[in-house]
Image 1 (tube, one colour):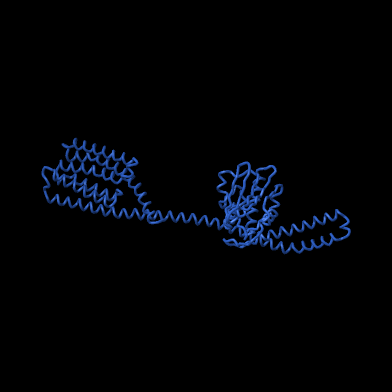
Image 2 (spheres, helix red, strand yellow; image 1 turned 90 degrees about the horizontal axis):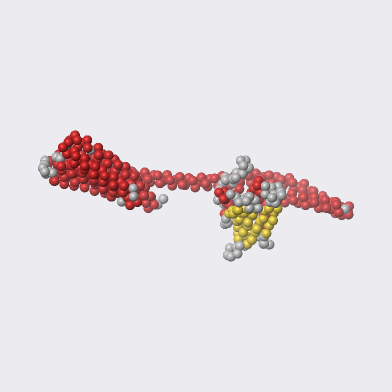
Length: 446
């Protein structure tokens, strides 16, 4: 947070603080003014009626200021309104001093009390407290001058004057340090809020990193398994293919269409095993890192691989596609295979869970027009769709609608990061009960 923003925020909070304190202080002033009738009764019973009337009038005037403080304009003029209700009791006390013993009147203590209260209790600014102290002293001096006995004895007047001025100076010092303490407290709160915001960002990044690490560990395990499979399976598969080729050349096999057809099926089966293990190795052997390697590959080949690797999940699902002849793009082929696997698996699971009749997944691939042409891919199913409240959250790490134990909710989050690394955006669209689609784009290979 910049210093200007910090100061602006402090001023806004201070304005609210002063407004609330002013209202509370005004209510307290009304109570104290009215309770002062006890002092009038004990000291000047013969003046109790005019003093009581004065107290009621001042209390009503303070109440009027309180009403103003609750208005919209009251917020803007809160410091001036606070000064107003503070001066009302001071004016009343000055009048009482002039009506009683002047310089030696005990009501002089009330002036001091108000000055100290404004400096210690009320959130005044320095200049406001100094002005209030000076005005209180002026009111005291006028009260003494208007008294029948004048400012006699002069010594007492000088002492009282000095005490009032000392009180005003002390009140100003209190105000200055109170103001600094309030600002330091606000700055500390702002720093804590900034740190909390930074921690939230770090936590979100840690969640993403945790997801990436979990996925990398899973892929590493699959890669180790795939490498072993490729080594262990290739030899017997190659042996079987050689045997099938030899058998297909035998005259007996050539003369029997049934045997020939069986051998062709066996050969295709062995080749499929080779493809699956090869796809698994390509998918699992991914190099970690935030940047895309930038290797050209055919998206059509990645699409074929992803469908073969999810064949067991796509049983009963009609797979269709629409794509141009040229699908050469730049990027991380294994990562894109992972994205497609995730999209196909999610779609198949959602349709199976909803009991969709004639489930279908259609993949549309087309080149975008204009400068910097990119390959736009859309995977759309005819399943139950995504609820509106979940549509904006599907890419959040660990967000899942699957049952416990059926998924971590990381697939779409990681897929989003993969497409983002390729300079694109993965986004979802849906119509509940009709369809759901996920779209992304990839850079063209030059």
